[in-house]
Length: 173
Image (cartoon, rainbow, N blue to C red; front, side):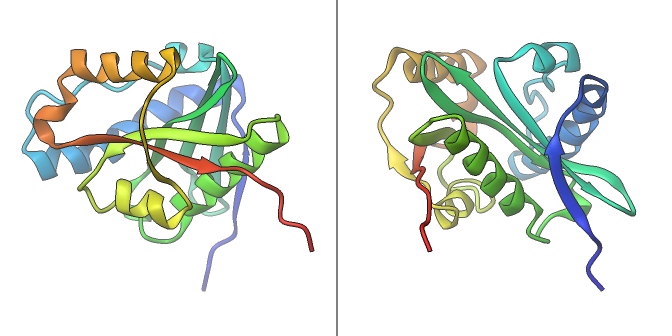
């Protein structure tokens, strides 16, 4: 029996719980890469101040089990973080959040949604490709700054990083 799940905007009081979700999801990377020095989770107060929007996925029997955060800056919409508690992984919740993020970005006038991810991690680039994202080259100052942040965090030590872009468009019946 499938449990009802809904996606909604995060309220100010929701951000504290997102740290726990992100940490749980990041533990998949820590295990995969045997990373003893994985970058820390984004503090709730910082995440709440980011420009853009954050969507939660809530199950009626479990509360919030995932979230997606999209940065809006300099005319771009960028999927900054997608996290689902691992025990709720592979149930379609990540895809629901990505679909909702794409829809909201489109409703806000964006023509594409970008992200940066690990190229070879199955639940990263291969997953996003099934959601309509394709590899792209960072050319804007905004996207080049994101690459600089990844370089400072030394994320490439665990594998190649890529940018991906999904075009946003309305489907007409």
